[in-house]
Length: 148
Image (cartoon, rainbow, N blue to C red; front, side, top):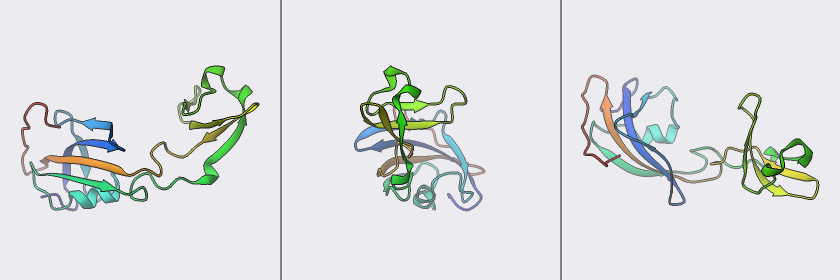
């Protein structure tokens, strides 16, 4: 049973607004230690008490997931700092130097870009389909092909 300190492997589908965002199969499941804050707290709470082979569908509110959008994380920057191909609303920007700078173009103005530095999933409800694939010391479930 999924409980504090157990090493758990899960397969899941994550959708936002009906669009599949991420799928983790039972072939290469996500491994985490329950109760160690390695995954969202709401995700841990939803999985607590499940057994190997059990599945659950549930949603996390924006606050339980990537948080609410913070208006302080919007910045206006000169277009000249970015390539012309990046002057597009919705374009996700990643630093060429270290890969850590991450923003989404929110608005394109005549000389500037309004960039959103919130996580792209901030403010969004996360819908999960999860199956417990294995719990250390409690066995492994073999899922049918095509199932998570």
